[in-house]
Image (cartoon, rainbow, N blue to C red):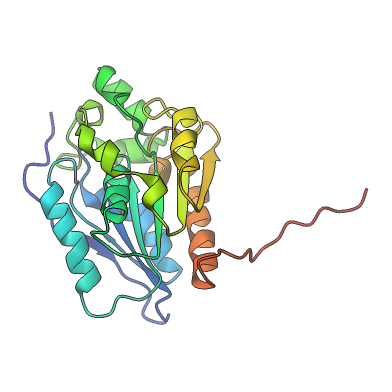
Length: 250
């Protein structure tokens, strides 16, 4: 069994030197994940001039993860908009930080937002855990690399107070949710109910998607959806549309 045993330093993906920064995304990983696992997502978002920094897994190191987020927000003058992103437990933790007023950001981007006590009751072997996380063979290979993932962590229960604290009705900033339509860990119907409580939330479901919406087979579509959201956010919190699909006369 591989294990991530020490608190990892944040991992950053910088924008190309020829581009001006368009914003900053701080990312909280899911249960058992090393921040380097988000290289594919981070590099894509950074290529569009949004700096990305992934911090420690909050399910293992909540104090350190919160500290790393706050230090990143206080470091110099991060390009705005400032967006807090999270996957799995990182998504739940991110909502809690914003709902409690511990951090101030311009928006939230959440993937695979957990719903109460679902994962804890689902024991799985390694192959089942891989399939629950992602159907992408490339990312499954990365998850199997030594030191990148705490195996079995996906089915560890999260603190009950995290669910109470992550009250989306108290989050006033825009929220983008990405959720796999076939997520076996966080049922889409339950996630839909959670997002409905937010004053300003958009939920995008990914066809046949598993739990890790950032790193699944549709990772390109997920990254493109996030970039479109970020571009709209730059125009204002009302998220005015930029590209509008026209209905053609028939």
